[in-house]
Image (cartoon, rainbow, N blue to C red; front, side):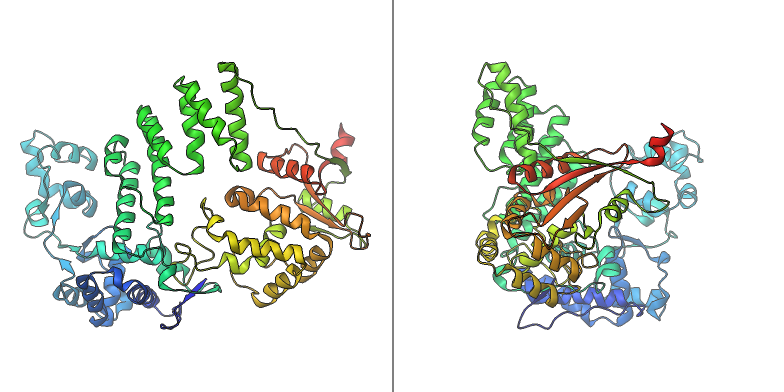
Length: 569
């Protein structure tokens, strides 16, 4: 996805043959954020970024290398970047003179041990170990255990190791670069190395118009809110007790994208609280979270706490809402258990539709998978068979709804290099695009869908789309699919896909067989799930097959037995 602003040029990507391509890509990131998010930065922050561009090329490159590395502390004597074209000391001196570095930072004991080797630490710390009654040849971990109670506070490297210790510097504005990284990526999960060194320029991205209204962050306070939630998640990952993190969770906002992030944070906080024995806190966190997984976890915890009436009231109300298959399955099981304990009438079990199946006895191929063996066995000129698995239905959906998928919805696109919208698997992905999706489905009803799909197929060749796998979706397959799959079936398939994209994008049958010469009253296609000897259906495959059976969509399971195995038996 290439985001465009009419007032700013389309960002380019660096030539990977350029040894300083990482600097060129970093400057693309900084320029993008300054152009599109400059109003969310303070004057001091804007001045600092402007200063970056005034540095010499070697200094900018070294500074970029430092930003890309983990942490904000560096051993100046360890820099080895021959592509700078000048000694590292010269570039480092320029960076220092421009005020980017603290040349005498305070180091905690853990930071000291991370930066220096055991051989460097032992001579300087031997007197301290001797005073503690310990030998000087302790390994690092034991040395740290001995010294930490005596030295809980941070000291300079000279105080730790003496005046002749190797110099250490701290990059002062690392928090600014984290803020820039967040506004560019839309998350702090991706680091600079992943993006600046790898991801730019390797694919063709869909151009999307980037406007101020489409930004995920409209105010600086929203960036601050995200950073606060990220800090809470890091504390949870570091093992900070959930009840302490709970106190720091920021209040909800009216930003839908940030609300979704907060829901996920509360889900994880509830999990941690439950594991730590804080059941009441876990219930409160689950109840406060809008994440779809939180409701089932809340009900299961209430069951374990023997609060069956409360769980029954929540579950009974929830069953009237639109649910994904996995949610409905989990909720039905809970309601059955609760009904038996409370003497209530349980909901009727869902009818188990009949899944068609066939068995084939085939010679075992010397090479190739069982799916290809079945495909080749069933293929006829008048009834061609293709191995498509999850690619065909997803691809047709992606081509029909291309413009909706890449609509500039707030929180969907942050930079010019997205494969698809960042909110694709969030709970509100569909609701925020409901009107646009309905227009797509209207094309299935009026017959214009075919023209739309083919037009996007020809115009978007090679452009990344999270639903379209270009090497599989060739014109022969696409044409046969449009000829043989009725729009009513496509509508059913697409609507189920949108109920839970994360869950329903997989599980489609392996093969599809077309009958292009069949009459209009006959089925002109069939989907076939292939299972080799010893293989069995997975839950998500069963849910799709049951859906097909209920909706009258032709599908079956083909169980394969190898003839050699049968003869041996």
